Picture (cartoon, rainbow over the protein chains, first blue to last red):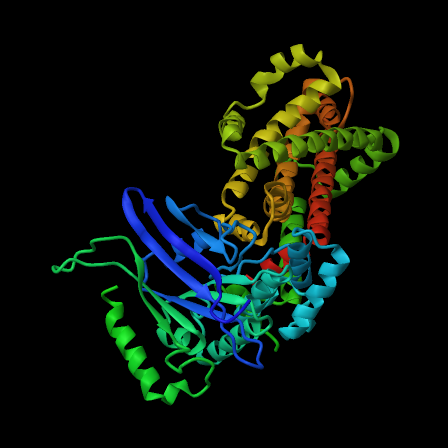
Length: 269
Length: 263
């Protein structure tokens, strides 16, 4: 892969539910970000107000729902199917009858890995995510943040380079939010081709962590009525703006202005 | 931290293990006192019942009768569990839902009216009792277990699909293993229901014996201490069976116990 090569693309997605147009001709590409001398994956944030169709889009991208038209393709233009894309759901679902280690091993085994190989990979991931001592715990014995880390690790046992995350910042206190941001960066930088696709309405955190932000919204008539299904209204290249891979964005006037603009546009999306 | 004793009389207050044991001991003592001081002549005293129990056990073959009853209930329970779980898990397929719903509705039929058709099918005897008990327990088991399966959140299935699991694996992990603790709980409740039906069912065909037949024979001769002694044994064995399934739950599904403790 070379810089700006397309890693996956969404082409002309249209979805109707009960006669309502939810998504209309929605298209975008995710490109490979390359930083010389640094292994860097991608983080794409999909921003949009509640009810605009973000989760619907995520479900289609995950292969869990079918669109009426259009599809999601990998870099070789082959449509993606369920199981090829990792998904971390909003409430960090895990198998309650398996331990933390068991949850990861099951994920590996059902993708064709030998149990011993899956166990080794699982143990490595748990150690990397600071969960080595929790391997024998059951999911209900973990805190929300720990569950989230296990849910991500579970998706990574069997190498999946596209990881979809539904509202990963929802309901977190500021300290936990910082931890999640660090975790996402850690996962992003585990492999050059790793791509995290984050669905969220937390504008600030999304802009801080993403290299690309997509604004999902609907067109409106002059009198304010919704006139179409949701599509990508704007694609913001945070790298081109010089606002990616930085820890000091909270005080950058350019970042703050971008955040203000997006917030003000949010209610009209 | 030591909890104040007054907690036992206040609503929604925590109590520790010693307090719980004390409360249970208090109520057992009250029950025994009421029994000893009972003014009803028809209620034999604890000593009479104890002697009757010893006599039944040592001289009147109570142990083989108990074995007969246990064999019957466990046979019926095994059939119930297999039939009910297959039907309940089948609710994930729309084709089978009306069938499962229909079986669950049969619980309103009751088993008394089914004695004749089941006698004609089985020819009576042990088979008839197994059929009746299995029928009685299955209708309730399916009702409860199908509901457990229906209530599995859709996200749990999606999670497995996103992990790359095929439908058989999803059925195994989410539906079968994921509800194992609840299946054992339903089994526990149904065993209790089956146990309460046992004397009635054994009374239908007494030739094979069993505690049900034994109690009816004692009633016929109005031997009240013996009747109560058999009732006491039925209660104790019922509690032991219930405890055994609870133990199985703790061993097979430790996560469910942790979940309950944290709730």
